[in-house]
Amino acid sequence: MSNCCESGPTGTDPYDLAVIGAGSAGFSAAITAAGEGARVALIGHGTIGGTCVNVGCVPSKTMIRAAEALHGARVASRFPGMAGEAHVTDWHRLIAAKDDLVSTMRQKKYVDLLPAYDGISYVEGSAKLNGQGVMVNDAAVGVDKVIIATGSSAALPDIPGISDIPYLTSTTALELTELPRSLIIIGGGYVGCELAQMFARLGTNVTLATRSRLVPEAEPEISNALAGYFRDEEITVRTGLTYERIDRTAAGVVLTVEVDVGRADRIAGEKVLIATGRSPNTANLGLGEAGIDLTPNGGVSVDDRMRTSRSGVYGAGDVTGEDQFVYMAAYGAKLAALNALNGDSLVYDNAAMPWVVFTDPQIAGVGMSEAAATSAGFETKVSLVPLDQVPRALAARDTRGLIKLVADARSDRLLGAQIMAPEGGDSIQTMVLALQHGMTAKALGETVFPYLTTVEGLKLAAQSFGKNVTKLSCCAG
Image 1 (cartoon, one colour):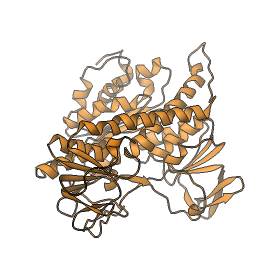
Image 2 (cartoon, helix red, strand yellow; image 1 turned 30 degrees about the vertical axis):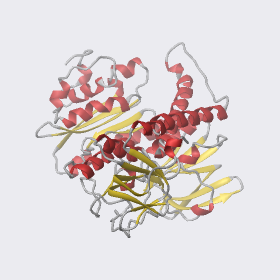
Image 3 (cartoon, one colour; image 1 turned 90 degrees about the vertical axis):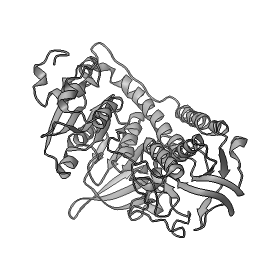
Image 4 (tube, rainbow, N blue to C red; image 1 turned 135 degrees about the horizontal axis):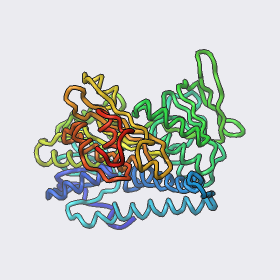
């Protein structure tokens, strides 16, 4: 690691702000505070950069894209007169390229940034709040305000026998030196679904086992469609299970599940990957001694201004246990820094927070689902448009997916949207802006969209509240 990151002033040197954690949230807080003219102690322990660049977004998304490239060649026959085939020729080179991308981005987006900010001193070490202040490697750090941004780690489900098996996490699965022949993935959320499809396309026999439906945050129509698309790719999808126990065998592992009351089944695989969520990193920080309350899921409890239960101490990012997306971590950390320095005037707002699942097709959403809107007391109306009504999908000969909009039936104001499409992640931002500005379905349907784009499907979905879009010519309406 560069010399800039080995140490910084400690002891009696005064700081305006200490940021514990050197991931995306920590860097966002430190850079924001330095921009305000503050002196910042950025305290990091272990590899700089946090989850996203090192073991999360960056390595997983490049491997997902690699798997998509294989799949794209294999399904070229959807175009008449074409055929294709692709396979992994050198797994070790593929993994090495992923590792090179990670190290390059870590260096450019984290390590190399520090010298550009005179107000930031990087302090390497294990931090602890002792009730009086911050200690790093048993030395006191002179500081007025503190932001806790220590992130999260893969969580283990409560399955008997799990501590006795060599399980994989989303981190270690991306570090495998050999591609497994078969893999059980426990958990059907974002990570479980993304990695299930990735490994299946790379050549592994995958079984996805989950207590509920796939991506439970998604609308039921989208969840059910994804399960069907996975089965089309020969991924075994097992939903609605109760995990009984997991055992090590000579051939790998066996997961015993209850499929009906009193009826058990056994799922065997060479390896097992645990993808049942993440736990906030709050251990060994001295939070109890410092009088900092935790949430029921173990996260640092913060209010809408990112303040903890102790005056002068703030929390941001995955350590709060809420909105565990890297961009929300950076956003919350920026607010925490500005509030810590300037008087707690800024309020955290996630009402128009986009989210994306990088399966193929991608799933993206913003705002309330139909069920959430109904629970909130709205009289709702919904629009559901399959992708075979979107000209872009017809031209690409790939009509997997759908678009669902939720609106207030009385005011016509849009309340939420979910998109399942190959370019769904890039299309959702239009709906973010629509929700932020209180747009109605009628106004969205009257907006000009470019033809032969996936995002044009949003216009069609908005129009379908009041008319039959199958009866419209191209670009009509």
